[in-house]
Image (cartoon, rainbow, N blue to C red; front, side, top):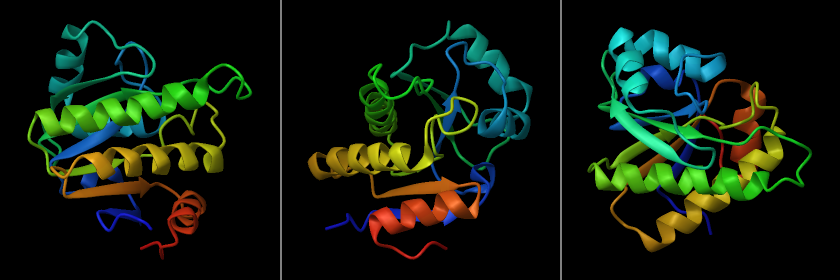
Length: 173
């Protein structure tokens, strides 16, 4: 049974009114391509300055910053793995960054969190496999934690939204 706290939307994560959005970050926590670049552009220069002070982040981990010019109060920078064919522990590292992002959200009092499809852009993780890991990781975490009231999987394109919706047995909005 799917947790009623989980939903899927197709849209731009930088416009969501939630307490925390998750950035598909790189290990340097620097501006990059895809959702990472979009978040940095929308948040403004304060985000890059704060990220530079954090000293990077390991794959499978996450760090939190302010949201700056975003509607979200916080940005959680989760570093997913680069896809190497599936035999290099990618699923475990991807699951770990989802768990760590949720732990940080809880620690900072965030009740609403939006995730992008971490690692599926320039990191090359196949979308369906990444969605399975994301959904399982978030569902498992939510089963043991009631503090987060809503998790949104915010998908930039229709294909990704349909994958998440099908795996969750939901209709994408």
